[in-house]
Length: 319
Image (cartoon, rainbow, N blue to C red; front, side, top):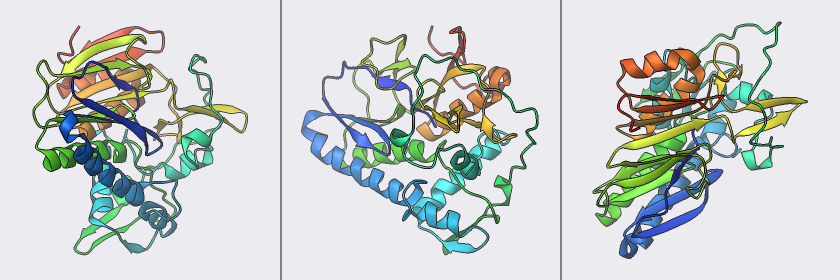
């Protein structure tokens, strides 16, 4: 998941802000187009929640997880979301793994994050490695998809979590839908997963990249502009909780099924769309020191913040 880029408050049009998908949705559009744009965005968010939420018992994904081992008919939207999850795993060599739903549930992340026992944001980012911990077998390549009719078969015992792709997909779809509905340039941010569509304002869209997307722009970080595409920030600073006497965060190491022992506390990446940006920012957190070479090879603009606060810029990210 990604969640920590705030839309800086300098836009001359209208800004809508509301709670959705367990986070904050922000919409920026021309004032006269805001009603139609928001209606389009809300429709996409409701659709992705019904399709891909791990927390709604009646969602398609919840039903699919319960049916692991059997072919299950799904909507084209969930099929798209699952295909993107598999694509993310393939692009990252398995660093972004959609089959970690069972592990997240076992760590206590079995409900909306707002209902968990949160840890203070300034708490030391260290997670002890269990010496008896066994390596985990990743099974994302065993997921079977069929397009006609849209259907899926999960390997028996596998539970899907699409946190690294579904919210970013929702941002991309919502921005495209709002632009189609209005013909105007729009920006959609879902907890800091940012997607744009149409013409940008003069000078571009202004975004404050920081550890917490709820920032008003005054928090430590960097203010940048983008003209199109998407931007995502994955961070270990905010989405953390305590369960069974231990500290946890939401980005897991697919090799162990446990929270990544952090090298970077925050990774921000710009890409052609929000989905690819989020795949890359999540992978950077998982890959740790290896992330710099991985991002440089793909020529992705990125800003990485180490646990000690040191900042590394890659791929033409502005200084």
